[in-house]
Image (cartoon, rainbow, N blue to C red):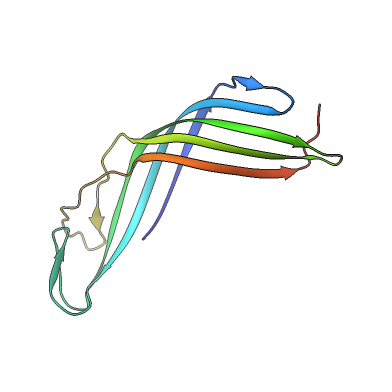
Length: 131
């Protein structure tokens, strides 16, 4: 399985001082997936696709979502720059159901959406300077 996705966020900074940055955000998001199905020995059916022995089929799906969350950063300052440590907590809320299709045009009964809660850790550093 492989996939890709992204989102565009907009937010409002609620805390912005020398050492902290905190903001809620909302965004539009998208995702796409590619899942390889391979049958080794016996005739079988997966998600409504009949697979003969040795057959391979690729399922392709994707959808859109709303991404909402909150991000916090702590800034650490040194003599030659600084470092940022932070985290984001949020939810990926599906707007459209993932529609799955195959390269060969076969019909699939696979249903589902990609969504849920997440927690991200941010680590960065470099040439930031105190203003």
